[in-house]
Image (cartoon, rainbow, N blue to C red; front, side, top):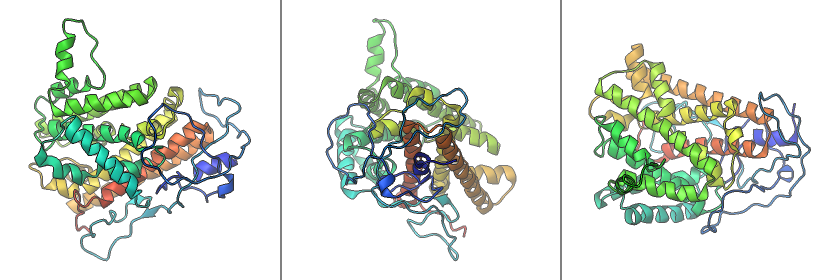
Length: 428
């Protein structure tokens, strides 16, 4: 069963440099409705994105398919952002003739959707504002870490992942949170002073910068002072303050819950590190469902200037789509950061290493099997997203699905092209 509304979502995400959920041919531009989504107030656009115009076309209400526990309200049409570029077809990267892939190549055999280079004007504007916030406003890193901060290319990352963001202000919401999350990971967990020892206490106190302590007047000042006691807490507190002013209460609460999931995943990985334990593959994948990118794509509506209502976000089918997207994008990180992590002391757990250790495979075999796991997750994500769009064609839900798909594509693009951080093994 089909309709123009459903055809549009199945045609894939629109916006600068996006492609994903490519299930059917794109419909003609004349059939694409212009966006009318309302959202939280954020200040005016500093850097404009090229705008495409398309007529607003009334779409007949599509037939409602079964979604347990939910009824689509009458009168909905499907406004979707007009395409700014033509989608690029999905691809599984070709295997080279032999040897190590060149810098900027995708992992051979990895199923992904190539995207166009993000708007360089917007990238530059976002990167400049973000650096002022990180280096001057909250004094996140010492000067000697500035090169690594620049090499992370957060501005390029966020522009690639959020092509429908109305302004640089909207992109800053995601960019601050991304930088803050990385500061916590680096300084609490990883190679910039991190350790599994005492991690639970550090994460709990940092989490109160996102989810504030409600206590008595006597003890409140001590907690409030702690919010500026180290760089990760300063970053969390500041980023969440900005986000909370732009987001609805429901969106803020959703993000806090996703961050609690992330911190629980950090703790599981730390416990295995302390015990020198290599988990079963399924156990590792369970940890990675929590220690993953989920907080990033689930704010795509806030960054886009609209809201996915809480009752739609909570649908089991939506939760499955979000989980699959988070899991697939996190395995992308495991694959691209593989060589970087090999150079760290001890046995750094990632999916290729765990598969090799637990299934008695060579490092190459473990890596190539991890590529297959990623591809299976991607196919499941796309199939489940398409099914949800058909069964519950509410405009904000469909737009949100497209935003998550765009985030998945942008995340892969950033990993593939960030040669400052990542190189690939010579397994082909």
